[in-house]
Length: 581
Ligand code: KIV
Image (cartoon, rainbow, N blue to C red; front, side, top):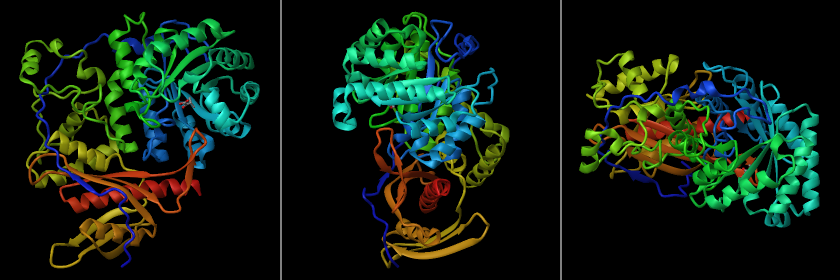
């Protein structure tokens, strides 16, 4: 049988040992959670309370531009709902001109999230990105217009480098284009228009004052100042915001915003310095995902404002930080971009204390080594709850454990997870937290099923070729079986899957880890695939990029785990393809 799976990266098998974590219980602090009720009424160009800072989340737009982070419409909708629950003021839901799938996803989010009040009565603004041209603006407006608070965000580059080499336009042409396109967006009936001078961090000051003054006259309501290439350092970026505030005609009638990329690792610091100098909208992403080194991370910016808002002149946000962990996990699963263990706030080690000196201090008084409590971000892990899951555990125990881990899962998803948990608990005496996290990943955070995993049988070893037989069910319920040989059992199984789904797939990345120690560990697999001759998507930079799709799977059997991950990635790919056709 033809072998066409290409491994551009050698498959890696990692078997990390689980670190010893000291997980202590904390009493929740009450000081912050009520701040949501202080959220001022939304007016596009004005915030009545000068200390209130709007949080603009661009996980679904800039975040999705990270390589491999392609998300399906359902995944984007789930994330948008979680962002709304989190209390994000503005959700940049996508770049509608980039593809039909993106347009449809933004439209759905505008309808389903942009009209539904949270328990606190909050409805987020839904924003669509566009370059400065009529086609992009028409698409962005078409996508967001059904939201209660729709916003169009249009941008054009203003640095010498970008104008000369990318746009090939003079300064005057750029000013004319920006002014006329903001006017055009307003003429469509959109009364909330954000304008960004791309690469503002490297743009000439006087030119920035001029173009910003012109777009204000044309009707822009928010002026976003991007450090597009992450080149500024905090004092420099803070001064840029202060100078724009002091020198741009009409600036008192609009909101100043920041958008800091993380190329030098300074995005959070730059964003906060921007707020200190007068910005009242901060553009961020969950887990800091985004182009290249990513963006300022929502959790870092928001938790710094929470911990140090007083020092920053009393600045505060409307974010309900207890939903941060769930948002982080959801974005990690759906984007396939794993959070590094030492990531501030949401990394697995962010609240772990390993050294004896630290553990001793923590036992005496938690404030010795903790500047915030895990409960503040929705993490309720504790030794003292004593909840160990096993085959006799019921739904309620499972739900409580999930909440401890930051997962707020109900309804059918909880039900399906419960039966999956039961089947593993039959084989494994104790289900650890890490086992459960792997099962949640495999069962809950999966794309819509096009092909359903059925069975897999392999033979392998030194005495002959590896062979695999795979059974998948299509969305009409029909079973399909294929057999293949391969260089190993996983390769053989993937080739059998390819024969069933009849798509030419490139396997770009494959990694497997055992989530707990021991022979009965659950294996977690992550793959990234691309389809040969697949459609491309347009980045905000105008570049055409091939889409890649990630998938995860978990099982006590490494071949099953591998096939689940592969089928998950294929489902994601086919789901998006259907929308684009
Ligand atoms: O980084 C950037 O400049 C952007 C703009 C479109 C805001 O993403």
